[in-house]
Length: 341
Ligand code: TXA
Ligand code: MG
Image (spheres, rainbow, N blue to C red):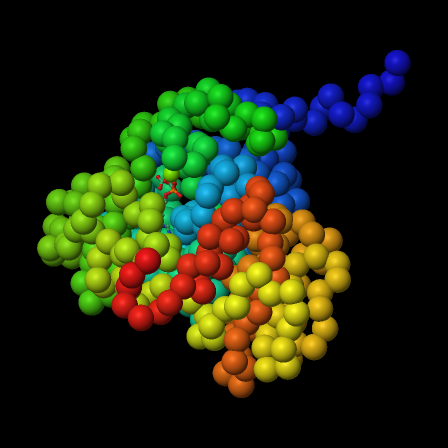
Protein backbone atom coordinates (compact mmCIF):
# COMPACT_ATOMS: atom_id res chain seq x y z
CA UNK A 1 0.00 0.00 0.00
CA UNK A 2 1.32 3.41 -0.83
CA UNK A 3 1.22 5.74 2.10
CA UNK A 4 -1.02 8.71 1.40
CA UNK A 5 0.27 12.12 2.37
CA UNK A 6 -2.10 12.32 5.30
CA UNK A 7 -0.35 10.31 8.02
CA UNK A 8 2.69 12.58 7.84
CA UNK A 9 0.53 15.61 8.47
CA UNK A 10 -0.21 16.55 12.04
CA UNK A 11 -3.50 15.18 13.31
CA UNK A 12 -5.87 17.37 15.26
CA UNK A 13 -4.26 18.52 18.44
CA UNK A 14 -1.03 16.69 17.86
CA UNK A 15 1.59 17.36 20.55
CA UNK A 16 5.05 17.74 19.11
CA UNK A 17 8.49 18.17 20.52
CA UNK A 18 9.62 21.56 19.19
CA UNK A 19 12.47 20.27 17.02
CA UNK A 20 13.29 21.95 13.74
CA UNK A 21 10.91 19.74 11.73
CA UNK A 22 7.99 20.55 14.04
CA UNK A 23 8.85 24.24 13.97
CA UNK A 24 8.91 24.20 10.18
CA UNK A 25 5.50 22.50 10.10
CA UNK A 26 4.15 24.98 12.60
CA UNK A 27 5.42 27.89 10.53
CA UNK A 28 3.82 26.43 7.40
CA UNK A 29 0.46 26.09 9.18
CA UNK A 30 0.69 29.70 10.38
CA UNK A 31 1.61 31.01 6.95
CA UNK A 32 -1.39 29.20 5.50
CA UNK A 33 -3.67 31.00 7.99
CA UNK A 34 -3.97 28.16 10.52
CA UNK A 35 -3.54 27.99 14.29
CA UNK A 36 -0.62 26.65 16.33
CA UNK A 37 -0.42 26.45 20.12
CA UNK A 38 3.00 27.24 21.54
CA UNK A 39 4.66 27.81 24.90
CA UNK A 40 5.74 31.21 26.14
CA UNK A 41 7.44 31.94 29.45
CA UNK A 42 4.04 32.95 30.88
CA UNK A 43 1.37 30.57 29.54
CA UNK A 44 0.69 28.69 26.30
CA UNK A 45 -0.61 30.85 23.50
CA UNK A 46 -2.96 30.05 20.62
CA UNK A 47 -1.12 31.67 17.74
CA UNK A 48 -2.16 32.94 14.33
CA UNK A 49 -0.59 35.22 11.72
CA UNK A 50 -1.38 38.66 13.16
CA UNK A 51 -1.43 40.23 9.69
CA UNK A 52 -4.14 37.84 8.41
CA UNK A 53 -7.70 38.88 9.37
CA UNK A 54 -9.11 35.44 8.71
CA UNK A 55 -6.44 33.69 10.73
CA UNK A 56 -7.07 35.99 13.70
CA UNK A 57 -10.80 35.37 13.39
CA UNK A 58 -9.96 31.67 13.64
CA UNK A 59 -8.58 32.29 17.14
CA UNK A 60 -11.89 33.71 18.33
CA UNK A 61 -13.75 30.81 16.75
CA UNK A 62 -11.51 28.21 18.42
CA UNK A 63 -11.71 29.86 21.84
CA UNK A 64 -15.46 30.44 21.54
CA UNK A 65 -14.98 33.95 22.80
CA UNK A 66 -18.43 35.45 23.23
CA UNK A 67 -17.08 38.80 22.14
CA UNK A 68 -14.01 40.23 20.50
CA UNK A 69 -11.44 40.94 23.16
CA UNK A 70 -8.27 42.53 21.86
CA UNK A 71 -5.39 40.11 21.39
CA UNK A 72 -1.71 40.56 22.25
CA UNK A 73 0.61 40.49 19.24
CA UNK A 74 3.97 38.75 19.70
CA UNK A 75 7.11 39.82 17.88
CA UNK A 76 10.54 38.25 17.60
CA UNK A 77 12.27 41.56 17.22
CA UNK A 78 11.63 44.59 19.46
CA UNK A 79 12.22 46.89 16.47
CA UNK A 80 9.33 45.25 14.59
CA UNK A 81 7.06 45.67 17.62
CA UNK A 82 8.05 49.34 17.81
CA UNK A 83 7.09 49.92 14.18
CA UNK A 84 3.54 48.60 14.65
CA UNK A 85 2.67 51.19 17.31
CA UNK A 86 3.54 54.70 18.41
CA UNK A 87 6.53 53.87 20.56
CA UNK A 88 7.99 56.61 22.70
CA UNK A 89 9.88 57.39 25.94
CA UNK A 90 8.34 55.16 28.62
CA UNK A 91 7.67 52.32 26.21
CA UNK A 92 11.24 52.46 24.98
CA UNK A 93 12.67 52.47 28.49
CA UNK A 94 10.53 49.48 29.49
CA UNK A 95 11.28 47.54 26.32
CA UNK A 96 15.00 48.03 26.77
CA UNK A 97 14.82 46.81 30.33
CA UNK A 98 12.25 43.99 30.13
CA UNK A 99 12.02 42.60 26.57
CA UNK A 100 12.19 39.77 25.81
CA UNK A 101 9.96 39.05 28.80
CA UNK A 102 6.47 38.90 30.37
CA UNK A 103 5.41 42.49 29.67
CA UNK A 104 2.73 43.54 27.16
CA UNK A 105 2.51 47.21 26.24
CA UNK A 106 -0.73 48.75 25.00
CA UNK A 107 0.08 51.62 22.66
CA UNK A 108 -1.64 53.60 19.90
CA UNK A 109 -1.59 51.78 16.56
CA UNK A 110 0.81 53.32 14.10
CA UNK A 111 -1.12 54.75 11.13
CA UNK A 112 0.76 52.39 8.82
CA UNK A 113 0.25 49.37 11.07
CA UNK A 114 -0.34 46.19 9.06
CA UNK A 115 -1.57 44.14 12.00
CA UNK A 116 -5.18 42.92 11.63
CA UNK A 117 -7.72 45.35 13.09
CA UNK A 118 -9.28 42.34 14.76
CA UNK A 119 -6.28 42.19 17.13
CA UNK A 120 -7.35 45.62 18.37
CA UNK A 121 -11.03 44.56 18.56
CA UNK A 122 -12.10 47.97 17.43
CA UNK A 123 -9.87 49.95 19.79
CA UNK A 124 -7.28 52.24 18.29
CA UNK A 125 -4.58 50.63 20.39
CA UNK A 126 -2.59 47.44 20.12
CA UNK A 127 -0.92 45.28 22.78
CA UNK A 128 2.59 44.24 21.75
CA UNK A 129 5.04 41.92 23.42
CA UNK A 130 8.38 40.23 22.76
CA UNK A 131 8.29 36.87 24.54
CA UNK A 132 11.38 35.38 26.13
CA UNK A 133 10.68 31.63 25.78
CA UNK A 134 13.07 29.84 23.43
CA UNK A 135 10.32 27.93 21.61
CA UNK A 136 8.17 31.04 21.14
CA UNK A 137 11.20 32.89 19.83
CA UNK A 138 12.17 30.07 17.47
CA UNK A 139 8.61 29.87 16.13
CA UNK A 140 8.41 33.64 15.57
CA UNK A 141 11.71 33.51 13.76
CA UNK A 142 10.84 30.60 11.48
CA UNK A 143 7.32 31.86 10.77
CA UNK A 144 8.82 35.27 10.04
CA UNK A 145 5.70 37.18 11.00
CA UNK A 146 4.12 38.57 14.16
CA UNK A 147 1.76 36.19 15.93
CA UNK A 148 -1.51 37.13 17.57
CA UNK A 149 -1.85 34.87 20.59
CA UNK A 150 -4.27 34.89 23.46
CA UNK A 151 -3.87 32.24 26.12
CA UNK A 152 -4.70 28.83 24.62
CA UNK A 153 -7.80 28.10 26.69
CA UNK A 154 -11.50 28.27 25.95
CA UNK A 155 -13.09 31.59 26.81
CA UNK A 156 -13.52 32.03 30.54
CA UNK A 157 -11.34 29.05 31.50
CA UNK A 158 -7.93 29.06 33.14
CA UNK A 159 -4.82 29.78 31.13
CA UNK A 160 -2.84 26.64 30.20
CA UNK A 161 0.69 26.20 31.49
CA UNK A 162 1.37 22.78 29.95
CA UNK A 163 0.82 21.34 26.49
CA UNK A 164 -1.53 18.78 28.04
CA UNK A 165 -3.78 21.61 29.30
CA UNK A 166 -3.97 22.93 25.75
CA UNK A 167 -4.73 19.50 24.32
CA UNK A 168 -7.53 19.00 26.85
CA UNK A 169 -9.10 22.39 26.13
CA UNK A 170 -8.55 22.88 22.42
CA UNK A 171 -7.09 19.64 21.10
CA UNK A 172 -9.91 19.17 18.62
CA UNK A 173 -9.44 22.66 17.21
CA UNK A 174 -5.74 23.17 16.78
CA UNK A 175 -3.72 21.02 14.38
CA UNK A 176 -0.39 21.36 16.17
CA UNK A 177 0.64 21.97 19.78
CA UNK A 178 4.35 22.60 20.36
CA UNK A 179 5.20 20.94 23.66
CA UNK A 180 7.86 22.98 25.42
CA UNK A 181 7.17 21.61 28.89
CA UNK A 182 5.67 23.64 31.72
CA UNK A 183 5.77 27.42 31.37
CA UNK A 184 8.41 28.84 33.70
CA UNK A 185 6.46 31.95 34.78
CA UNK A 186 3.03 30.32 34.79
CA UNK A 187 0.92 33.46 34.96
CA UNK A 188 0.08 35.75 32.08
CA UNK A 189 2.13 38.76 31.08
CA UNK A 190 1.66 42.07 32.83
CA UNK A 191 -0.45 44.34 30.61
CA UNK A 192 0.41 48.02 30.82
CA UNK A 193 -1.56 50.73 29.05
CA UNK A 194 0.62 53.58 27.80
CA UNK A 195 -1.99 55.23 25.56
CA UNK A 196 -3.09 57.89 28.03
CA UNK A 197 -1.64 60.60 30.23
CA UNK A 198 -0.01 58.19 32.63
CA UNK A 199 0.71 54.45 32.65
CA UNK A 200 -2.12 52.19 33.81
CA UNK A 201 -1.66 48.63 34.99
CA UNK A 202 -4.46 46.79 33.19
CA UNK A 203 -3.50 43.30 34.30
CA UNK A 204 -0.98 42.36 36.97
CA UNK A 205 1.12 39.51 35.67
CA UNK A 206 4.50 37.90 35.32
CA UNK A 207 6.43 41.15 35.69
CA UNK A 208 5.84 42.91 39.00
CA UNK A 209 4.41 46.42 39.18
CA UNK A 210 7.34 47.35 41.41
CA UNK A 211 9.83 46.37 38.74
CA UNK A 212 7.98 48.57 36.24
CA UNK A 213 7.71 51.46 38.72
CA UNK A 214 11.45 51.30 39.27
CA UNK A 215 11.87 52.28 35.62
CA UNK A 216 9.01 54.70 34.90
CA UNK A 217 7.65 55.74 38.28
CA UNK A 218 4.19 55.23 39.84
CA UNK A 219 1.47 53.33 37.97
CA UNK A 220 -2.25 53.78 38.18
CA UNK A 221 -4.12 50.50 38.72
CA UNK A 222 -7.16 49.61 36.67
CA UNK A 223 -9.80 48.80 39.28
CA UNK A 224 -11.67 45.55 39.61
CA UNK A 225 -10.46 42.02 39.59
CA UNK A 226 -10.74 39.93 36.48
CA UNK A 227 -8.12 41.66 34.42
CA UNK A 228 -9.14 43.63 31.40
CA UNK A 229 -11.63 41.10 30.06
CA UNK A 230 -14.34 43.70 29.60
CA UNK A 231 -12.34 46.49 28.15
CA UNK A 232 -13.32 46.23 24.54
CA UNK A 233 -16.43 48.30 24.27
CA UNK A 234 -17.99 47.06 27.49
CA UNK A 235 -19.42 50.49 28.22
CA UNK A 236 -17.98 50.12 31.71
CA UNK A 237 -14.35 51.00 31.32
CA UNK A 238 -12.10 50.04 34.19
CA UNK A 239 -10.40 53.40 33.98
CA UNK A 240 -11.58 56.81 32.86
CA UNK A 241 -8.38 57.10 30.88
CA UNK A 242 -9.58 54.37 28.56
CA UNK A 243 -12.95 55.82 27.65
CA UNK A 244 -11.68 57.83 24.74
CA UNK A 245 -10.18 54.85 22.99
CA UNK A 246 -13.40 52.92 22.43
CA UNK A 247 -13.97 52.69 18.76
CA UNK A 248 -17.48 53.06 17.47
CA UNK A 249 -18.24 54.27 13.99
CA UNK A 250 -19.10 57.94 13.83
CA UNK A 251 -22.32 57.10 11.99
CA UNK A 252 -25.23 55.56 13.88
CA UNK A 253 -25.93 51.90 13.18
CA UNK A 254 -29.34 50.62 12.13
CA UNK A 255 -29.43 46.93 13.00
CA UNK A 256 -31.50 44.14 11.45
CA UNK A 257 -31.82 46.09 8.23
CA UNK A 258 -33.47 44.28 5.32
CA UNK A 259 -33.30 47.20 2.95
CA UNK A 260 -30.95 50.12 2.46
CA UNK A 261 -31.71 53.79 1.93
CA UNK A 262 -29.81 56.07 -0.42
CA UNK A 263 -28.10 58.06 2.33
CA UNK A 264 -27.01 54.91 4.14
CA UNK A 265 -24.02 52.63 3.92
CA UNK A 266 -24.87 48.93 4.02
CA UNK A 267 -22.98 46.37 6.06
CA UNK A 268 -24.12 43.27 4.22
CA UNK A 269 -23.95 39.56 4.93
CA UNK A 270 -24.78 36.73 2.57
CA UNK A 271 -25.39 36.30 -1.14
CA UNK A 272 -28.21 38.73 -1.92
CA UNK A 273 -27.78 42.07 -0.20
CA UNK A 274 -30.48 44.65 -0.92
CA UNK A 275 -29.57 47.32 -3.43
CA UNK A 276 -29.85 51.05 -3.06
CA UNK A 277 -27.18 51.86 -0.47
CA UNK A 278 -24.68 54.62 -1.11
CA UNK A 279 -21.89 52.20 -0.27
CA UNK A 280 -21.85 48.50 0.55
CA UNK A 281 -19.38 46.25 2.28
CA UNK A 282 -20.29 42.59 2.32
CA UNK A 283 -18.82 40.78 5.33
CA UNK A 284 -19.18 37.44 3.60
CA UNK A 285 -21.10 36.95 0.36
CA UNK A 286 -21.12 33.19 1.04
CA UNK A 287 -22.43 33.62 4.57
CA UNK A 288 -19.30 32.40 6.37
CA UNK A 289 -19.14 33.80 9.90
CA UNK A 290 -15.36 33.37 10.28
CA UNK A 291 -14.84 35.37 7.12
CA UNK A 292 -17.37 37.94 8.36
CA UNK A 293 -15.54 38.35 11.67
CA UNK A 294 -12.28 38.82 9.80
CA UNK A 295 -13.77 41.67 7.77
CA UNK A 296 -15.86 43.35 10.49
CA UNK A 297 -13.66 46.16 11.77
CA UNK A 298 -12.12 46.99 8.42
CA UNK A 299 -15.62 47.15 6.88
CA UNK A 300 -16.94 49.46 9.61
CA UNK A 301 -13.99 51.78 9.10
CA UNK A 302 -14.58 51.80 5.36
CA UNK A 303 -18.31 52.56 5.62
CA UNK A 304 -18.01 55.28 8.25
CA UNK A 305 -18.14 58.10 5.70
CA UNK A 306 -18.95 61.63 6.80
CA UNK A 307 -21.32 62.34 3.90
CA UNK A 308 -23.66 59.49 4.90
CA UNK A 309 -26.27 59.35 7.66
CA UNK A 310 -26.18 55.80 8.96
CA UNK A 311 -24.82 52.31 8.51
CA UNK A 312 -27.57 49.79 7.90
CA UNK A 313 -26.56 46.36 9.16
CA UNK A 314 -28.14 43.21 7.78
CA UNK A 315 -29.11 40.47 10.25
CA UNK A 316 -26.24 38.17 11.22
CA UNK A 317 -26.97 34.68 12.59
CA UNK A 318 -26.53 34.23 16.35
CA UNK A 319 -24.32 31.16 16.02
CA UNK A 320 -20.57 30.61 16.17
CA UNK A 321 -18.70 33.85 15.66
CA UNK A 322 -22.05 35.51 14.94
CA UNK A 323 -22.44 35.96 18.72
CA UNK A 324 -19.25 38.03 18.93
CA UNK A 325 -20.06 39.95 15.75
CA UNK A 326 -23.54 40.83 17.00
CA UNK A 327 -22.20 41.72 20.45
CA UNK A 328 -19.80 44.21 18.87
CA UNK A 329 -22.47 45.62 16.54
CA UNK A 330 -24.96 46.09 19.38
CA UNK A 331 -22.34 47.93 21.40
CA UNK A 332 -21.56 50.12 18.44
CA UNK A 333 -25.28 50.81 17.97
CA UNK A 334 -25.98 51.59 21.62
CA UNK A 335 -26.75 55.19 22.62
CA UNK A 336 -23.57 57.23 22.77
CA UNK A 337 -24.41 59.67 25.55
CA UNK A 338 -22.54 58.93 28.74
CA UNK A 339 -20.89 55.60 29.23
CA UNK A 340 -24.06 53.74 30.18
CA UNK A 341 -25.07 50.28 29.03
O1 TXA B 1 1.11 36.01 28.87
C1 TXA B 1 0.31 36.40 28.04
O2 TXA B 1 0.02 37.61 27.88
C2 TXA B 1 -0.34 35.36 27.16
C3 TXA B 1 0.73 34.74 26.28
C4 TXA B 1 0.19 33.75 25.29
O3 TXA B 1 1.44 35.77 25.64
N1 TXA B 1 -1.42 35.91 26.40
C5 TXA B 1 -2.59 36.29 27.01
O4 TXA B 1 -3.51 36.81 26.11
O5 TXA B 1 -2.80 36.19 28.20
P1 TXA B 1 -5.06 36.99 26.49
O6 TXA B 1 -5.74 37.36 25.21
O7 TXA B 1 -5.59 35.78 27.15
O8 TXA B 1 -5.07 38.23 27.43
C6 TXA B 1 -4.71 39.48 26.91
C7 TXA B 1 -5.24 40.57 27.78
C8 TXA B 1 -6.75 40.63 27.74
O9 TXA B 1 -7.24 40.87 29.03
C9 TXA B 1 -7.01 41.78 26.80
O10 TXA B 1 -8.23 42.41 27.08
C10 TXA B 1 -5.81 42.68 27.05
O11 TXA B 1 -4.73 41.80 27.29
N2 TXA B 1 -5.52 43.48 25.87
C11 TXA B 1 -5.00 43.07 24.70
N3 TXA B 1 -4.94 44.08 23.83
C12 TXA B 1 -5.41 45.16 24.47
C13 TXA B 1 -5.63 46.52 24.10
N4 TXA B 1 -5.34 46.97 22.88
N5 TXA B 1 -6.13 47.36 25.04
C14 TXA B 1 -6.44 46.92 26.26
N6 TXA B 1 -6.27 45.63 26.68
C15 TXA B 1 -5.78 44.78 25.79
MG1 MG C 1 -6.57 34.67 28.49
